[in-house]
Figure (cartoon, rainbow, N blue to C red):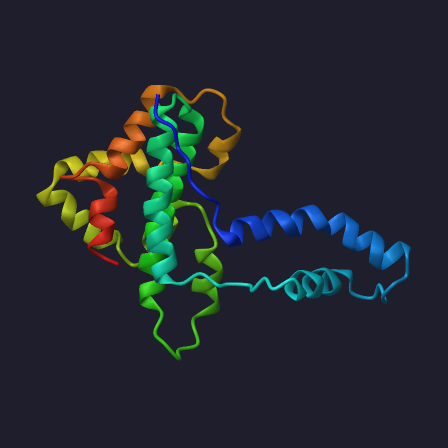
Length: 195
């Protein structure tokens, strides 16, 4: 059995710290009257930031990296018989790749279209493909590579709602990982050419 020993990045640990301390901070703020309770969320964020944690925004490079990380995690889970998590994280690998393609479309010093930005906060892979303006390019690629079309038909049906699905089989997880990561016709290989 494969073991996966990966140190959690500081940002993940910081998020756990924030989520763990929210109730305590609200009690300190509201019950003990140590500070004004007019804006407890601001108080929590200020407390969080005063501990040396910096809020970070995602950029194209971060999304590209996360795509690779999620795929490695999915394969690790699959190798250890954890098919639900493997399926779920593999879908996020594709989502991050699509979002990297979307990020590429934003120009530095450009004020982005609010509708495009808001629609980008989605887990719907077909919608993200459309927002990335890659729908026609993918249809053209299907002509040259019929396997890519088969793989896209598998990948596009992924949803973050599968986190609640107890019926994900090893076959479903294997099919999704193959569709995403096939070295010849995988969806991720194709998306990486559009980063």
